[in-house]
Amino acid sequence: MALEERSLLEIMASMNDSTKKKLGHQLGELVLDCTFEGYNCLEDGNFDYFFNNALGNCYTFNAGRKWLPKMSLNTGRRHGLQMVLNINQPEYVSNTYEVSGIRLVVHQHKTIPFPEDEGLAINAGQVTSLGLKQINLKRKSPPYNYCYDTDNSDPMDNVYGELFDGVIYSTGGCMRTCYQRNVISECGCGDPAYPLKGLAISANNSLTAYPPCSEIDANQWQCLQYVTEMYNNNSINCDCNEPCKETTYTVTLSIGAWPANVQKDMLFEKFQDMVNYSVADTYQENLAKVELYYEEFNHERIEEKPSYELPQFLSDCGGILGLWLGMSVLTICEFLEFGMDLFFFGIWEGCKRKRKKTKVEDIRIEQDAPNAASLNMVNLKKNPMETSKKRASFVDSPFYIN
View 1 (tube, helix red, strand yellow):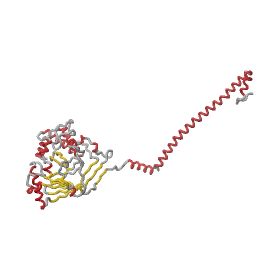
View 2 (view 1 turned 45 degrees about the horizontal axis):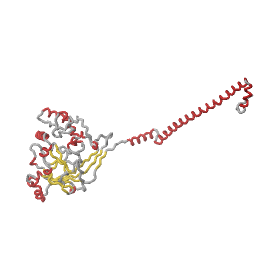
View 3 (view 1 turned 30 degrees about the horizontal axis):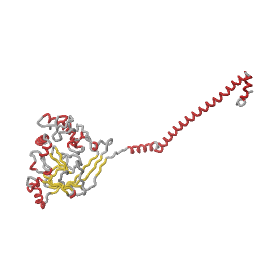
View 4 (view 1 turned 180 degrees about the horizontal axis):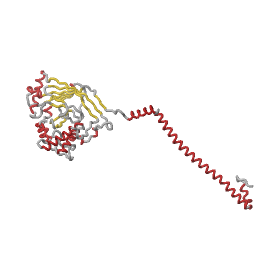
């Protein structure tokens, strides 16, 4: 990054949000004409503002953060988004950026874009047509993969979710949050290319904005370079997994000359009152047209699936047992039935033994009775008078007396 560009970033980072917005391009200055599905789309609510520390004021069409996103009803360029953009090079700050034009990013709803690192460059003096095709990605959650569940996101993982309402988790936002958090923790200042306030990057849970690291301060500058090098070498542990659900777009790019000679006069007259320079003399340097549309409504779906699941594992185990041991599910059921039979047979035998023990005790009691009777007989012989008196009581007795 050039010294002048770095100095400008430090100056801008020291300003408050309202001042930074006033110094940049306003929506009406940047977008001169806009139609979606053939209707005017410059009205309020279609564009969401956010400030990018590297590029300044940025605007997102159909962001879906505050209202439901608009839907395309048909395919083709006539039914998509068409905009005439004002690059306005006379307002550029000298000795900062080497490239003129517009940075355009097509991204998922409710995510924050990073045009300094991604997207396309839109050049002046031509029409850029972008045919879109949607790709839906679905990644597996643990234990198969370590993806991030955006439905249960943690605000500490994305500082941009604090600064802009409705912004959801993205890998890029998490990585920048992690980097800035480490810079602030190690250096006591922040990289001016990224947000300088927020609980997600604060070292002491404070919402106070940190000062930008300055090249004038040797200690701050060396510390910033050290952390940046550690980050670029993946020596900083940033646990920023890919989201479990993500939508991306493939773009088919085509470029043509614009405007046509027969429409120049009409366009010059239409836009002349909206800019502060001569459109007829500088339109090839300051005006550009963009067309975005769906090529087709068919979308591609990429979903991760386990290569080896539990039912397949059990099936393979059964096949191996059947091959080497001659076992099958039916055999296993027979073993279970055999075990149950043994169990119930053991219970039955125990009950039978208990009943036999009871009968033996009854027999012993009956056998003891004659012994008692014999004793009585001896007593009777000793006392004949008692015998004659009690003989009648032995008539019905089961014992015979001589």
